Amino acid sequence: MRKILIANRGEIASRIIRTCKELGILTVAIYSEADKEAPFVSQADEAYLLGAPRVEESYMDMDKVFEIANQSGAEAIHPGYGFFSENAAFAKRCKEEGITFIGPSPEVIAKMGNKIEARLLMKQAGMPVVPGTDQAVESAEEAVEAAEKIGYPVMLKAAAGGGGIGMVSAANREECVKAFASNSERAKRFFGDGSMFVEKKIENARHIEVQIIADDNGNVIHLFDRECSIQRRNQKVIEEAVSPFLSEQTRNEICMSAVNAAKSIGYVNAGTFEFIADEQENFYFLEMNTRIQVEHPVTEEVTGIDIVQEQLNVARGKAILIDQSEVKRIGHAIEARIYAEDPHTFFPSPGKITTLIVPEMENLRNEVAVVEDYTVTPFYDPMIAKVIARGENREEACDALIAGLEKWQIEGIKTNKQMVLDILKSAEFKDGNTTTDFVAKYYLPNSKK
Image (cartoon, rainbow, N blue to C red; front, side):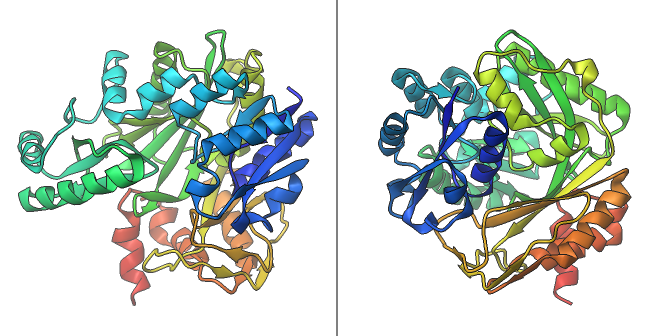
């Protein structure tokens, strides 16, 4: 594999380019008119303009992406996360064009992309799933009927959803009726599929996930767990490896359940099984992300394994470079996502970055999508950077992240930097009370004082 096209933008494009350079692989960047000054464009060996800023006219224009792939002579495409990363039609088109897709097969993407089908597959694999419907509910009345059987509160979820989009909780019949109408319409708009299903809402829950890597020879290993419970708008803000909540016994059980499930579906590539865990450490399958994830660096920091490199090796038909017994966990890592957004309303806050100072510090890793004088546009996800810190233990990692963020300077736009700092410094976070309702329970009430 001599040349790879990266069908993505921002920090994940830069991240993939970095590993490719280390491996001597040439890279091709594709970019929209809005991203012509973005760092990833100049970091790649070649760069091609896709089109106008809107994703439909640039990053999601499949024909244009393949036209550039063929023009540039790229032998493979790395989709990063988002855009085409979990698009079975895109993976199938790669096959048809004779280009290697750095990801699982289109058949597996399709199966795991439908949340209802994925629930059934995981049940068959012996994995616990959240009590809920095994078929789509077609109307608000059906949703209410299902919710009353399951017991409120419930979550209404889009069958084709992902990334926290398409999930709404309902505590009673009225909320369920209202949530069905709005969420079904939203799901149609985002995913082209308005199918919904109903699950029991787990109270005081933790969002736990397990990173796995699988090759074409049937080898599957896990790289331990991450806890990603600190969220706003059902999207993650702070992630850490490993979870401060799980006992070693539960950790081993949840990691091995992910390995066995990956084997059962013939999975190949890096992937993540997402779970919800209750206060008694009972864990339930939520969904599988058939791609690399935003939060992969915390796993890399505690295992020393380059997940992008493993993806490239597996895509080239090579066996995983390491055995499960060789995967060691050392220390603790915490990641903070920096968003260009209002820290109180969580609405995006685009604009020109007038000052950007990114500190270089021991035990601090910066994955940055922007530079000074760069204009953050309203066209894409507002995440502009990730800051990752590691330490010998959770306390050290937390202190290192606080020290790093306090030296971060970003002016000209609103960001959530202070919100992240407030959370990291709070007694509740330090005590490990990191349930999925953390922001609503602890941050928002204090932020209004």
